[in-house]
Image (cartoon, rainbow, N blue to C red):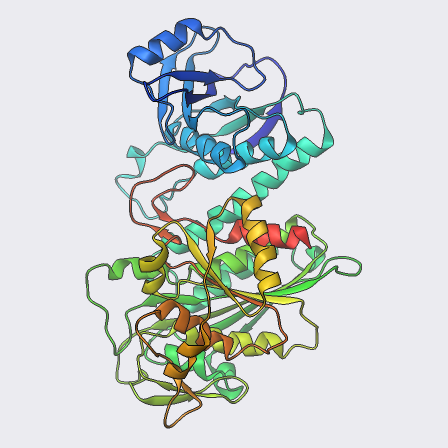
Length: 496
């Protein structure tokens, strides 16, 4: 991972990153240098000749005079104050473009602490690559930017140093989420996922950091009545697991949340087999589990005064002679029965177990957030860059959306219409696992709502599209696993 620093001194790095903005519809551009004074007149003429526009995701490199290279990253339309997400994305785009470079200084418009933090976060998030499974071609890929320095007059302040340190921690655990998502199912099973996270917890300080790990194997899951996790995982040679990572801060915690993440390490659809086209992306069906597991460790490393219980129900959904059949009835933890009409609607089954288990704890929860790549309907409704938020508590949802405005992650509130609930009724069980096809994202949310106490503040985040980027990289977002929701989960804990 890149080293992240902050400085207000003379730029000694060989690369200097500056902003570039468009000033009018006729192609006018302006260089945005932050607090660094440089002669831009000659360079601006060169940029005009090169056809620079200043649009988002545009990165242009030109030879420098006092430094080896000047890098201009697009900020969009010129503004007296750029949004934090604009700065975050611009820094990320430049950082991605500087793979193979030893070091760079970022001098983008940043007068406030929040702007400095956004630039640091974006630059760090953009310096990511995943080459673990490359062999003969590994040397062909340039290493990510090694040293990132944020140039700011606030550099000497304790708060600015803390903001950069936080950005490094957020990037570190976003990398972990991305790595887990990008790891092929041949190497990431329910069991290996739990072992990987146990090692991460140990490296973060374990009990000394307030962290504790508990793991249920298939025998314990079956004997204790986790019918959802067992039902989904029973068709695979790789048995299911339930991972619990708890964080307890020193002193009295301001609040306690449960974070629950869907952990299907590979989803074939089971006996409702998916088409071959696109099935390779189903290694990302554990994105929610990766996000909540990494978030609780990040929260511990930040020493936040909020207790967190992270639950990751893990299973591999495979077709076999032992797989759950359409019309089978399973019993969720706590006793509620479900008719499994479609074995490919499996994420909600493992989440139901985890939701019930989280609420059975003696510790009083202030809220539950579940995170899941749950429905293709989410992508149809909101596309591949905006995730959905559903809730039984409008105040909790409104607070979370304010959190996402700070984190920069895109979420949009969606309803849970009561009239759709009847479509989940079953003639032979307490409910069925699928209902109306139209509004499928909302129906899935209503299914989960059945497993949440009416007075328990709850959020359901459907991240199906944004969790895995199959298009081109953009801003600080790479191809493959994105790490979506980790930043918001951490920020929610920070807000208390």
